[in-house]
Amino acid sequence: MSQRQAEGKALRAPRGSGMQAKGWIQEAALRMLLNNLDPEVAERPEDLVVYGGIGKAARNWEAFEAIYRTLTELEKDETMLVQSGKPVGVFKSHPDAPRVLMANSNLVPAWADWDHFHTLDQKGLIMFGQMTAGSWIYIGSQGIVQGTFETFAECARQHFGGTLKGTLTVTAGLGGMGGAQPLAVTLNGGVVIAVEADRSRIRRRLETRYLDRMAETLEEAIALAREAKASEKALSIGLPGNAAEILPRMVERGFIPEIVTDQTSAHDPLNGYLPRGFSLEEAAAMRTEDPKRLTALARQSIADHVRAMLEIKSRGAVAFDYGNNIRQVAWDEGVENAFDFPGFVPAYIRPQFCEGKGPFRWVALSGDPEDIYRTDEVILREFCDNERLCHWIRMAREKIAFQGLPSRICWLGYGERARFGKIINGMVARGELKAPIVIGRDHLDSGSVASPNRETEGMKDGSDAVADWPILNALINAVGGASWVSVHHGGGVGMGYSIHAGMVIVADGTDAAEKRLERVLTTDPGMGVIRHADAGYEKAIQTAREKGVRLPMVDS
Ligand code: NAD
Image (cartoon, rainbow, N blue to C red):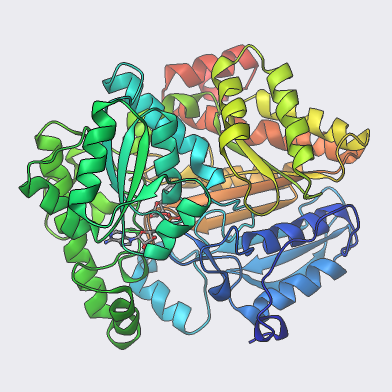
């Protein structure tokens, strides 16, 4: 246990324009590591767990302290290497190179399953980095809320005439990412019942205004939902309980919503999914005493949960998998038609990926919300022809509370990201912002992930499982001068099911940063364009032609 942990002090990123580190990039990495573990941001900071089951920011407290110390000592021409949340070396590099390179949770493919991972984890040799947890660019539920909003908006466009008014969505899981669901549904005008096994998560979403209210029983939730639906009012209802019990009960009662999905951490049956009939405390005890049995019970419950989703679908609901590999677990447990409903990426998101669009985010290191509001104004001015984007920015400003360092998210594509990055850097240079800005993204992006049950499900050319793309993404972003770059395995969907890369770059107002931003914010979404063009998506080929992205094999 570290001194810091022994003192029980909560972590919080320093604010303002002073620095502890020897340069703004190192300082940014330090502040973002601390911000990931800020109690306002992280789900279980006392265990270094940020979100998504056991997605961590550092392997253990000793590793955390060593990262902290190394970042304060790191020179402007050095690079620290982080192996699964532990700093393992520092090399001389050069000022334009990344200051940190990370590899998290990677296992040789034949060993890449949860059993091997947990054995290594117990020996202290590995850490689950999830996506943005281990790469220090998690910003809380606000980081996913636009993606979730866009997913439900597209679902509304495809199935309900463009709005969720008068519809009910049933989902589960109000954790770090899943907590964005109720707000995303109500922003689209709909009603949602979100089943959550942990009351403290429901309370947290109520406090942060992501959720409107809590019902004590299924009966109460149904009555509230019926009333709101009938009067076409948007309403989100948190329901304490276990999804593997509640969904079958809904089916028995013939209570069928218009949409059904799920964001429990089903990707990690041992740590992320509560088996039916268990309290949180009972599951915690069994997790150490008999982890194999707990995993087996969770997997059976997941299978029943998916059976109920399939039944709800067969009675007329729109069903989709929300990126937690729940179908795969159920299929492994013998649910042969588990893949009868699609994943959210092929169903709603892929056309955006073809244009290099994805969840772009930025964070004000000053800690001053005014800095974010100034950048909002720039989006509204510079991208005024994009009505959907401007609508989002206005709505985010009004409805979304900051968590930790003030930050913003919006989906920008190829060309737009480099343009915006340069503008931000200019604002820092002219002193219009009080400190540098950190620019990053989720690993769930257009050209940074191979995940056959999620981002690359059902690719046009069948290349779903080809993982060369995220590796190329990390390499080209490192060459271009991203501030920190990471390659992870297992994020979103669990061990064995994905490989993905992260990228963060700091706009510190210097000329050198401007060149790096131009390069990296071009190559990063550019990878999305070429990945989808290579797979034969006409929209991506067209984007490449219009924007001058060179494709040697497609153009010849
Ligand atoms: P989390 O671990 O923070 O939260 C999961 C929640 O599910 C917890 O609050 C837990 O109490 C609840 N839960 C577990 N078992 C339950 C059960 N049987 N019934 C009801 N509630 C139960 O995870 P998160 O960060 O919210 O992510 C959720 C899932 O979504 C993960 O699998 C993650 O990989 C995936 N994910 C999806 C996206 C996306 O954009 N779709 C993005 C990131 C992550």
